[in-house]
Image 1 (cartoon, helix red, strand yellow):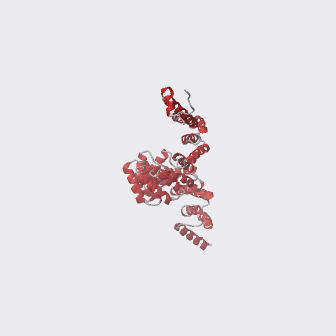
Image 2: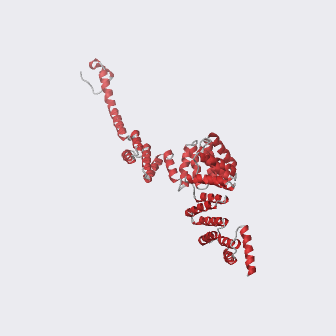
Image 3: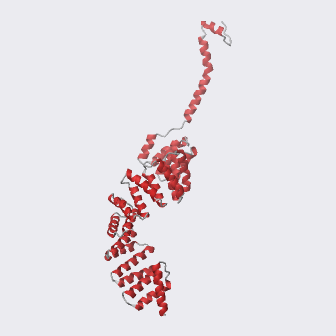
Length: 410
């Protein structure tokens, strides 16, 4: 039998009495090229598929603070696929922890080039620019808020950025939103209350602080703010209550407890003022201003020796523009102790260092009223009249009295 070049159904049937062989052979030869093409394409995709960083391996590097090893491992993967967000994120974090901010910023920026809304990259740049360029930091924080409109922490951070530029009206809008979304977080309530105190909105601030303390009566941030609010509102009797609670907790800060010191001093409660000052000294929170008010309290209690010892310590800590107060205060103390020559010596020192004419007046007053040395008093008073620029009503009155007296004599 002769077989033709093409096979119709009849010819296929006649070959060996069956068409199945020819049908299968025919289909195989037609499909084979397609299969080969598909296999080649799939092989190409497999070769082009980027390797994925081994998360466990990377986490081990980070946990052991082996940041250089992590970077070396990740760079080999980044060479194959330079736009893989997971690899770029790991590299940014590794460089950041390795104190290489230039390369950290490089990889976080690569992440933003791929996805401008990426949270960790935007957060990095927001934090990076927050201190020196808060306006620039706000651009990144704005993206975070847009992508996460229910996240209170982002609104609070945006408020912080506005406040760094003293844009308090804008800051309070974001603090209000953060507090509305998550009022139980003391960071949100404290930020809002603190700004309200600065704006003298004490009623609203106190309501937020009060609500916070109802949830947690020993919340240190709210107790500090309660001291600040009452002190700024001149409610000194109330200010000392949370201040005392902070000390019982072993907490507090220089600013907060200084307000407690001043509250007791203003209320003439000098023993309590001294007690709080001693607490601050024991907890290494006392600066020269604290020691100064402790010295003043001892002077009010007529314990001048203790007062002067503290004032001498103040002098050792003093910067030039405050040392004058301490010399003057020590002069006042020696005057009260009737040690008039020492009083004059301290007034003289204060004038020599800081050229305040009022020190000359005090020297003349001691010579005039207590030592009865008219000639020395006249010398000091005349020099005072030459340089004086009286400001307070009492000083103006004394100045006019002396001016008339010595002009009349002349």
